[in-house]
Amino acid sequence: MPRQCSVLRVFTRDGKGGNHLGVVTELDGLDGAAMQTIAADLGFSETVFIAIGAVPEVRIFTPSMELPFAGHPLVGAAHYLFRSGVAGDRIKCGIGEVKIRHDRDMTWIDAPMFHERAYRDGAIFAMRVGLKNPVSTWRVEMPLDYRIVELATPEEVAAADPDPSAFGVALGAAVYARSGRNVRMRFFAPGAGVFEDPATGSAAVALATRFAAAGEPNGSATIDQGEEIGHPSRIELHWEGRSASIGGTVAVDEPVEIVL
Image 1 (cartoon, rainbow, N blue to C red):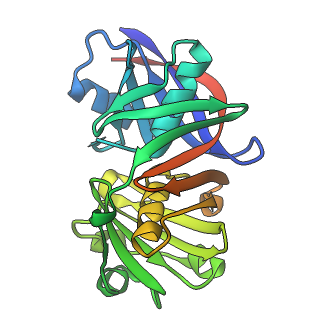
Image 2: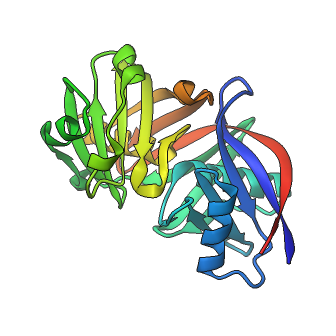
């Protein structure tokens, strides 16, 4: 049956760029396999399927797999629900309930951090995938396996070209350089069927987890991402204690019709 898929761009920068997201709320007749087929056909880095209820339930799919948690899909889902007038203060995903809020033109989610799940990991992963001269490397469970590779300059981040065949068990890698509260980041996720993602909220939470584990119990950052693939994006990040907040602006594109 034909059904409508709303299309958003999440974490835009000055109204441009952002990460495309498909949003489907007509779920009659859709099981997980059908949702996966739709996500693969749409080809966005993620597509969400929202069951509207007292606490809306969100399932998140990349073109090749379902994710228990991802930042840009949940921020986009929250924006869709606020715009539709049906949002409360929470949505549910694979890791449980996540708080949401909308402040002026910014949509936010509050995600849990688990400091004990961040580990210094040496340079083995970075060397294996071809990321040279890392300043530091970390492993963070989100709960899927993320690697965090810090490089010395934004120019080195821009030049990064990791080997997707060498990621092993790692779902993805955030490559970043930091100057004060300004972070330049790229995120590569061949394990999820997305070689490079334009804007990655879960990687922002992973960065906060890494910073907290390294001795910064609270802080904030502005993360710029996506230039190399033509989708300039911006994520605002705050963290304190065991919680990280990620937020940004969202643009609405023309919907598309899907048939399954």
